[in-house]
Image 1 (tube, rainbow, N blue to C red):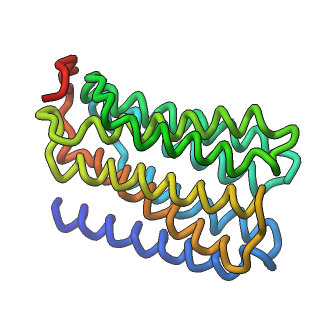
Image 2: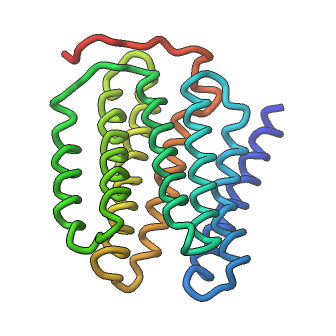
Image 3: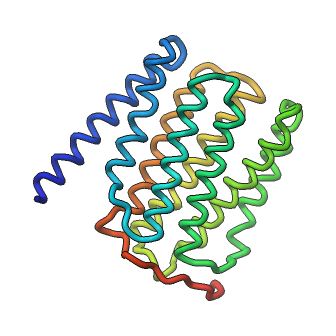
Length: 230
């Protein structure tokens, strides 16, 4: 059984790597169908890797991964679907935030400050190039920074193993970095090669977040801590 599970994991890892490498090759020049398949494959593999999602935390992470896959597909189908794609990713971050809240609801306002500064700084830097996109992008920045804050509040909690805490927090930071570079590419200046960094950071972020909810590590039910930080 263990050998079968390990073999399945290796197969998913190989398929995911093939999809990621394939997408990097066709990202700017390949046909839409090739971009759709190769971009979706790493996320499909992560969903299969996490299945079955047992426990509230794992189920919410699974929902976030599924919404991210939907966002990937929408963004590749047509440029006219940018707003729906952005909405799918916004909901994915809401799912991740809800997962982190299921571990602890303590405020940890001090840990919120870096993300507050990040949100304000991003808003100031992006605002001149946003135009009519200002409201949805501002909402997206607020949500992803909230997600990062809630990941930070889990650090040191007793409800999730330390390894999983670092994976979730690292994934949140990598996601913020990926979206930050993407926003520069879309609304500031399209620097050459920036798209490759965006995707590599994105996949690394999703892998870390998914790994924080692996079945063998996630308890079936997680208590919610409302205690204040020490």
